[in-house]
Image (spheres, rainbow, N blue to C red):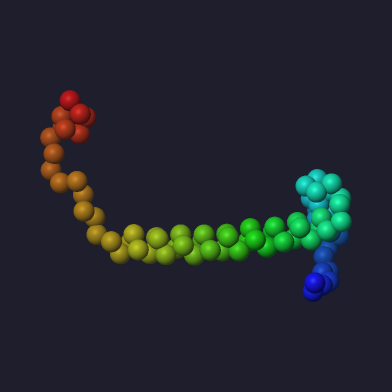
Length: 78
C-alpha cells in the first residue's frame, strides 16, 4: 500500500487524532480512515457544488411557463 507523509500544523494534528480516537477508538489505521473519509466528503461536495451551479445556469436560461389563467376558487380548491 502506498504511503503518504503529511505535515500538519499542531492544531490540525490534534484535531485529526481526536477525531480518529472518537470515531474509531484509536485502533490501528484510524487516522488513515479519517483522512480517507474526509477526501470522500470533499469530493462529493465538489461534485454537488458543480451540479448546483449547472442547475442554476439551466434555470436562469429557462423561460417561465406559469400556470395559465385560473379563477380564485380553483387556486384554493373551493
